[in-house]
Length: 125
Image 1 (cartoon, rainbow, N blue to C red):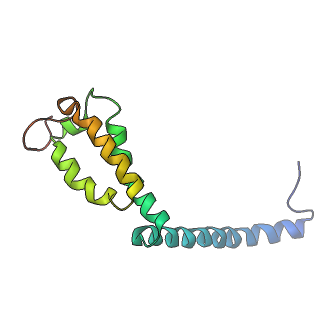
Image 2 (cartoon, rainbow, N blue to C red; image 1 turned 180 degrees about the vertical axis):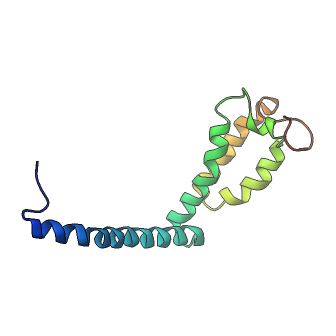
Image 3 (cartoon, rainbow, N blue to C red; image 1 turned 180 degrees about the horizontal axis):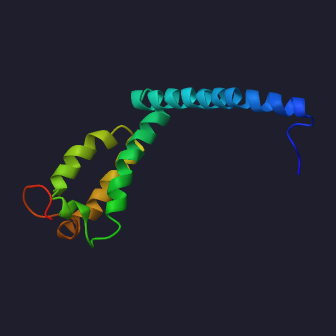
């Protein structure tokens, strides 16, 4: 076993200083994370717009994997509500928007499989 300290004195120093070092490392990482999130939310560059648009596409993709027990049906969400909510957000990136348009055409081939017909009235359960 390799020890991080070789003497009792260095062990005491390590035990005293480690919490401070660990906290400073974590705070440094946390401040970087906050900065990255802030830049993402601003959507000022191509990468952040792409990530934002992909983020908005993930849920519909996951929900479309099966028509069994569709959450859209369960919660009374219509196809138009999904489009109204997602279209503008996904338009942040043209590449993702092109994929979204192709994806929505596939959904349209089986709307009753994914959505209730008519207006949403809240959860059906």
